[in-house]
Amino acid sequence: MPGFALVFPGQGSQYVGMGRDLYAASPAARAVFDEADQAWGGPLSQLMFEGPAETLTDTVNAQPALFVMSMACWAALGEALAGLQVQPAFVAGHSLGEYTALAAAGAFTFQTGFQLVRERGLAMKAAGEARPGGMAAILGLDAETVAALCREASAQTGEPVAVANDNAPGQIVISGAHEAVRTASDLAKAHGAKRVVPLAVSVAPHSPLMEPAAARFAPFLRQADLRSPRLPVVGNRQARPLTTVDEILDELTEQLTSQVRWTESIRYIEAQGISTFIEVGPKDVLTGLVKRIAPTATCIPCGSVSGVDQAAQLLRRLLS
Image (cartoon, rainbow, N blue to C red; front, side):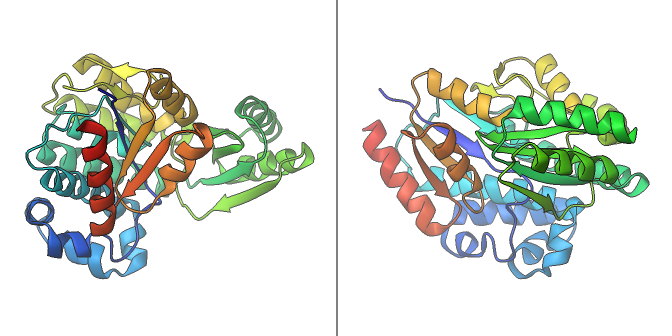
């Protein structure tokens, strides 16, 4: 029987209004939003549905909101496929989305995952306030070239900058101190980058500037109730499945300062014979990346009632 993979988006996919239609149409999704409001101690769902956008975009709010949204989408999809045994062959999440992937794979409960991403957001915000940084997308150069330019920029400025996300062929994101990011961006343009796009962020995830966040987060993570996942979760750092609690601890502790190897992760899943991907969460950022990495693959975004219906129809055909 052919298999499929679930992919879960990370920060940047949030938008005001996300999940509103699912809350109205799906009892399973509504239960997730209601549980999140209880855990939040306030109307997180109202912030997701109504904004304001600047409050939702704040990393301390965006991270729990995205986790909740993706878990609600997964619950709605399971509801739509009632009576059908649905077990993906692999799951993977981009940066923050790795937490949703792990929750979907049974590595921790919804409550534990919610508290983890909430604490992660607080740690990242504190690190960003202590030492602000930035990010930029480099289009048209390969990861090895961009990594070399980051090393050159760091040597020139004395400040850290590194490849944060290898998102897809020709789409690399760098992260670090502002001066070093600007220098690396200028070097990329001089080396033939098609475009360099500064990103509207105030923190520098997946860079050395997140070392204080990782140090603050690690004790909280070690106290969490983690289990071995029931499904293979392809991790960001190694682009290989995480199979034990120790591997998950290492992954999530070091993820804040390590590169997201998304291109390699999707290629690994594709090499296992998987050609169907469902993006579980808001927007369709990962759908676009998957199609660039694996052009023959099918990927459907599942972040709305209509998306859930389309994904359910596809999986019924695939699994019947």
